[in-house]
Length: 174
Image (cartoon, rainbow, N blue to C red; front, side, top):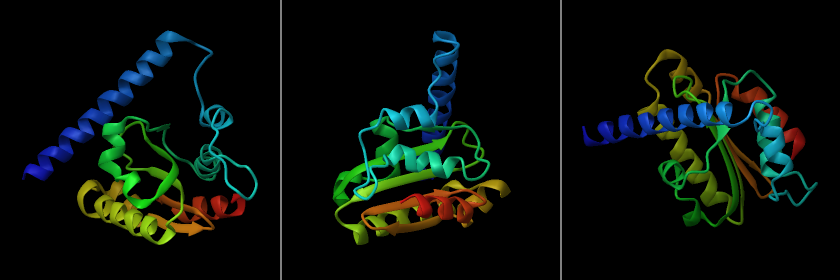
């Protein structure tokens, strides 16, 4: 019961934070909104193969199929709820989640020195999505279709009802 209450509280925090960020950005500027592409251009996180940033790889995923409004998660408290990135030798990561938790979409792209351990951590995250966070039919479908994989030193988790299409686009870009 305590875990369920903690989960509900965490989802409320995400929802409130996302709503607050959306309100703040729309009030602060009308033409200065940050898109995934713009944040990717500002990122210094690049793959070894072709100097594509992790944010650009996320952009490829998000543009491969119809995702709900997504934003980069950078709050330490939220990232700690997803996984302990430092525990797995993770050098760089980009995490995007839906602005409204009703969809349960998530994109995590990671550069790591320990692919096996990172894949195991992402599989644990997938299990949490399926068994703890998916309540509604649309969420259950997205969680069930979550893909976890790797190519070279890049590992990823994509939660979406059409995650296979997004994965295909990502793998072509890596």
